[in-house]
Length: 333
Image (cartoon, rainbow, N blue to C red; front, top):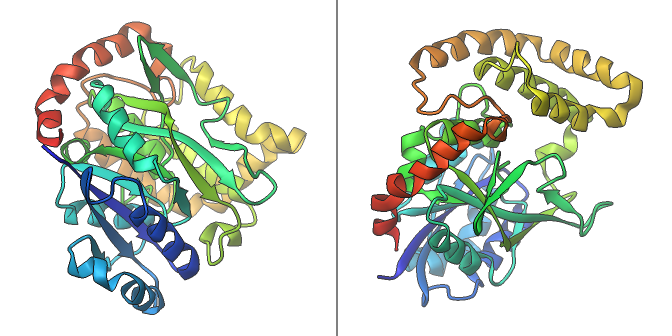
């Protein structure tokens, strides 16, 4: 059975880079021969500039049903990804941000890794900066990203979007990305903890490599002078949503330190400043999070970024994963 994958590219402006990103996907080894694939662009660009450029460049691919375009009614990265996943025809989902560039073998390596790791519900690899002051350095994983190797599989606590592959049935079972609280950022962190709590482990495989383009034109991130404010907001909301507040959660503390130590003594102020700048959103989100928490029925009561702090719990989750994924994998491979 030929493997079939749907590649979702969430987009906002940055026309030139998006065209390059998708062109590189279509140029991947094995495209249309060793596997069948489609690219789904979910675009919230306020005008038709990207849409026109896409169909001018990839109109032939659209005629072959290898390319499709959709415009969500609501903006936001989570909304983009969710509507793209909903439109997907195939059992394997790959989310590739529009400022990512794959290598010729990235998709083939992704398929191979999913096949090999029978306990992987979602998988990522090395995300390397391309351009900018960090050119050639790892964006992810970073030193604070905890991983555990069991036999030949490396499990990872969180996948921070960029480039990630999963199964459509897993994505649906976990509930998709959170459009209410983490629609503009933090969606990968939130999805990661929900995946683990639902019994779907995350895996890292070094054979998968993709590049995160620095300073891409029209990027929302470039207009943010203080990204640490958003990080402070996300950490607080994730801590509240997944009951980190209270108790001895050493790795969560180390994660906060990894993000704010670079500011020295003013790092404490940066956290307070970030929470203050986002206070209206945090207050508004509290009611939504409380509603979500009432509906939560986790199979494994993991805390955010504390997956590997409870060995018995993560081993229980991992040991059950292969059987849990067996039927889903049979539809994909």
